[in-house]
Length: 464
Image 1 (tube, rainbow, N blue to C red):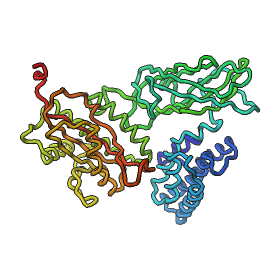
Image 2 (image 1 turned 180 degrees about the vertical axis):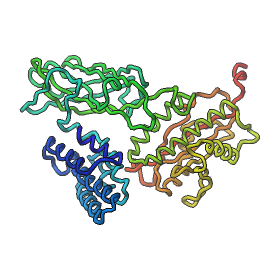
Image 3 (image 1 turned 90 degrees about the horizontal axis):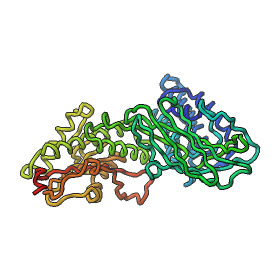
Image 4 (image 1 turned 90 degrees about the vertical axis):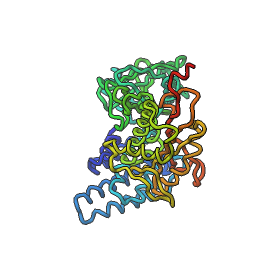
């Protein structure tokens, strides 16, 4: 879709405001009028404000003397949109409008464009699908009758698809897709669902599905030819649907999870190397972080990942090399060893801070805006759940003082062990601490919790 392409371009910091404005007008012509509190109207009016923010960014860069008038226009328009927003609007849309209403940073336009490009609801309500190069040979005919609505639910390995879903490159993956139709059009024999993408078919391939009234669950196969860097944005596949009647296709309107977002995972190259369960779990957690905080800056995201990767590698070293002993391990030892270990990472190096004052306290380690607190358990074994319940308040308080929604805590469990260790993927996850703001805050705080296991006997002792 042209508007999504224009938003993606604006999100990369490139593109012209006029291109975005033209794409917006085309989009508005397709969707027709909407009530002011409708989410689609809110979306389009937010993009309209974004056009002025993009103009402000370009004019400021070119040192034009009247550049500020574009920022003022963006703030005024966004303020009017924000005033008529409702709790039915997606959180990303509300956040984008609020950011534009307080526009003061040149990077805001790109962040808002990226956020708007990921809002799926407007595309579900409109006739935005275009025939791809590999569409069925039958033409999708326009109809003067009301467009029938179908809903789809997509599952992968028995579970509803995540955003994004992690796939192995080069393999063919089977997804289960279930369709529901409120009312089949007269003479409709089947419902055809296919997936379109901007990527070439030899790189990204997806089969279609044909449903009949007595067969509403089908299989769709998807293949990605090669791997992509873990921090690259997900690959999108958008579903389009049409009813088949007397050999002719009539377009249908889709609801449900109509957009698939997929990323790749190759255990041979995934970081941390040679720890595939931990690497896969880390990739899933970074996807969860993106979903929870879509506007997190790329710098904070990168720093969080660098620290998590480093802590996982340190945990593997502690387990495999039996680093330290019960006579030497305490919090000071832990902080010294981990700091040395992390600073050896060229992506971290001297940027790693230590004992920085925040919120009236002193942090253990910090990289950019991401605080890493350290704890040691010596007497009894510490489960991940217990660590998440006990130790997330302190890093959250530090992070909030620095206006950050993300913090980390590493817990070294050096207690004597009676059972062997599990894989590292079991020992990491996001915790959502209780906040004074109340339950389900609009802007949540996340704490990445990693439990590092030590204190194991030699493996042969488990056979005695």
